[in-house]
Amino acid sequence: MTATASTSIDLRTEILRLKKERNAVILAHNYQMREIQEVADFVGDSLGLSYKAKESKADVIAFCGVHFMAETAKIVNPSKIVVLPDKDAGCSLEQSCPGPALAEYLRRHGDKNYYVIAYINCSGDVKALSDCICTSGNAPKIVQSVPPDRNILFVPDANLGSWVMEQTGRKMDLWQGACYVHVEFTRDSILKIKEQYPDAPVVAHPECTFAVRLLADEVCSTEMMVHFCRSNPAKQFIIATESGMLHRLRRECPEKEFIPGPTTHCACADCRYMKMNTMEKLYLALRDLQPRVEMDEAIRARAEKPILHMLELSR
Ligand code: 13P
Ligand code: SF4
Image 1 (cartoon, rainbow, N blue to C red):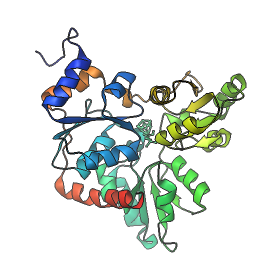
Image 2: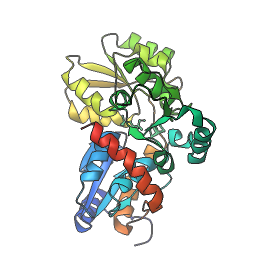
Image 3: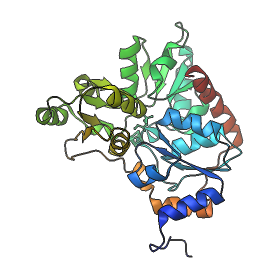
Image 4: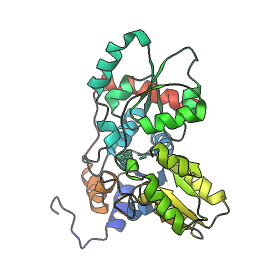
């Protein structure tokens, strides 16, 4: 067969067959397309996926998410082959904070002796310069664990950082990065959908802007969204995050209705990076064990410490 998978083969069956043959585990983020979520062994948020990657006994981790997530899997489980179906699946937050720019910032502000907390949506280089990693599922807890006399620099997401400051009362200096998907939800776009569904609670990701978070009934990580919607008595929910989340919610709570939060110009929000992975690319990744995530060992070892610190703190 050529480098492109034949359209005549049943991709789902072939993926499941190759998964067994390769002794692979398929980990998928909540934003992946429905078909990928359905073949995955585990679907979750960045925190859950990090634990699964660390604990995995498989020989191959096929990571359906974006590059920093697959790289995290490699960092915590270096002896495994980690494949990412599309090697170009990046993240605007990761791009907003290049390692050399952070190193230079820390050099220039040496007098602050910063404790650096890096949101997991960053490169291995940035993780290697950090004291602790956090995800949207544990950020307030991680920030609260920092000794009160330390100055905190929070990178790269300024929206998540300000939400954490609101939650904890702890002042931090914020890197000015943003998720290009979540900043597309606006006060007006959410008010408009609220008019149509006045009884539906608004559930928003903390990467949303302050104006949107103010309108939300719940602000939480993608995994916490599942718990919130399951336990809340409402029958309809407005979901202000990436559209893939709706597949997960509909699977978990089939009796409830999930309305995508609109942006100013779209009925729902898609992350172009998350959507680069397709069933065909997943099939090829399992077949060819490419594209692989590889890292410089010195950086990997330095980046592992703050991730393990986070995993320990959020148990
Ligand atoms: P979660 O960890 O909440 O799933 O968020 C990851 C992400 O990339 C949000 O845009
Ligand atoms: Fe990155 Fe935003 Fe896409 Fe999440 S939704 S992977 S933060 S660009």
